[in-house]
Image 1 (cartoon, rainbow, N blue to C red):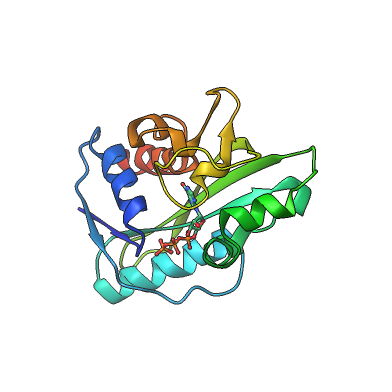
Image 2 (image 1 turned 30 degrees about the vertical axis):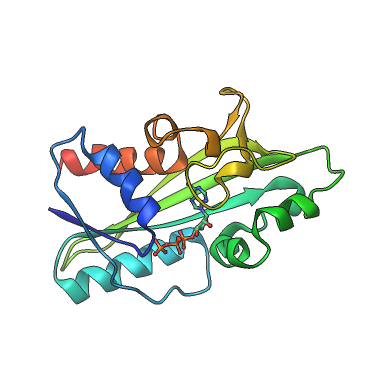
Length: 182
Ligand code: ITT
């Protein structure tokens, strides 16, 4: 049994859908942990260590973000706050008239068991910031994250479709592969 620590119910839905193909039981707890200001990796490491010590269980946490090239990686580690404040319309405004719309979603999974040191697993997916919001599936930045190979935004993909190649799928799959041979 692995406990996924998160306050984001969309992440839980996606993770459950990914884990169901494997023989690993996943439970979810919204423990809340203090996120130090730092990289995705630093946040994932400290969150996983804190939660596994606190619950005395093996846990995973995830720190994720949207990195926009023309904005030098913004909002990156500030994604959650920027989504709540500027929102998708604010991001579209910042990119008004900008041609290079390259962006990446990155996800870092931190795993830690009691009495051991944390491990991290990085996943990413590349795409572009659309010129307008499209679709109402998914959450947060999904309607403005356009995937050229699909010809659609994440907001137009079902959970199953997004889970074929998302940043979260890639990081969780790396974790699952490693965990399965422990
Ligand atoms: P927890 O820390 O409790 O897990 P959170 O929502 O605060 O939940 P993060 O700290 O990892 O999660 O913040 C990442 C933010 O990046 C998230 O709130 C969204 O705004 C955005 N984000 C991450 N993954 C995303 C995805 O798959 N689709 C859309 N937006 C995403």
